[in-house]
Length: 543
Image 1: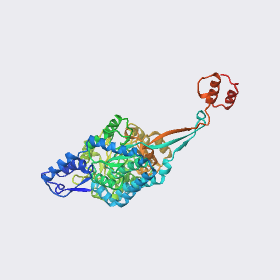
Image 2: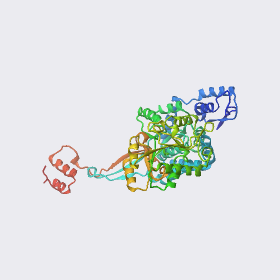
Image 3: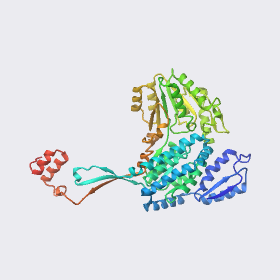
Image 4: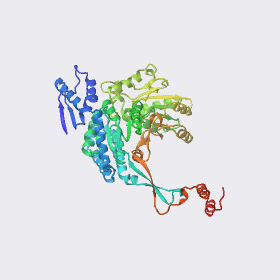
């Protein structure tokens, strides 16, 4: 691995716009040339215009364009066509290599996540490394069973015969991951695609550049580069990739970009899995264990990447009478979790970028919202941090109630009756997750029956995605398709139906000429009446 050292680019300067310049360099220059030619860039401090101009020239030469994307896909498809990725042994070797990578490079991974998001080390370990390793372990344990053809019974019309469903890899697949859990949401789909026997291109998010760079280096070092590649970059690189013909695309991110991905895939009739998001509601009844409820909501909001999670609690609905009690409980438990000065806690991630920070501040500063803050609201632009913020009775038309928040802001909507929450949720696009806190069994049943969402969790938040055996995916505007475990294997496989016949017999009844006797027998067979079949065979059946 070669390293190009640019001594002078990181520290803020009066001549170059500090963080904006660093971000611009990261998202526009750094990814384009970083790993297409197996090079990386190391930054030191202060400024050097000559070195920058040299880097810019290199960038022009190394840009990942449509031609290089085409050649990459062609190469991977050629390698896939050799059949090497279809073997059980190859799949197992790659999965074992990912486990080895996660174990040997744990510190580097956690450091990268801290660089990108200031993610607390334990949170990074549990939510990114442990979860990715768990996905690998499940695939290693179950892969032989997953790959085994599924026997299917056959009908009398095909007698004598046998049938099975064979899972075969789709081919060359593209995975476009996101920045909020940049290691897990890159590796988890890759694990599924490899388990199914595909060649894979991973496009990590440029918004988390440290993790993107690390992924490119690690996957190049640990996995089979003839079948697994990483392409770093931003919009131009992603556009070049989307212009190619893939056998499947999995995209994680916003609904706006999801529509772009789907439109690009449609040109080639490429199937897609879209893991999007939405406003995930939590309905809180008054008969709950208050401390447990408050702690679990906090864990599913602020202790989960500062709310920068597609399944985090986006807003709460509770009754007018119970709202003050719930707010007090949340305040008390937040202080227990993060201390009196919430914004200074080291147990919460920062906002990922100045752009996202500015978007969240705009939500808070809207006229209809700013006077609804009952806790928090403090912000630190330099550190990209916003304190846990609770809003009470925000107008439905406010921006914070119209778009996915994806940050440490939690509106509480009040209703007269807890059942009134259903109509509020049903009036909105279907969320990726929906939560309910209650001890009322009938309310639980009604919530499951009447609320449509990608996933659902009763009396907790977020942890359903870590439950083995459950699919993860959206519905409606929160996405399409699903993955995790066996569902990943199935999503990246084609289920090929196979019927086996022998030459032992060949009844003439299926062939012309179609005589009345044949018709009587066939009608009896299709009718499924054994008595009529016997009569037809004896020639005693009449229409």
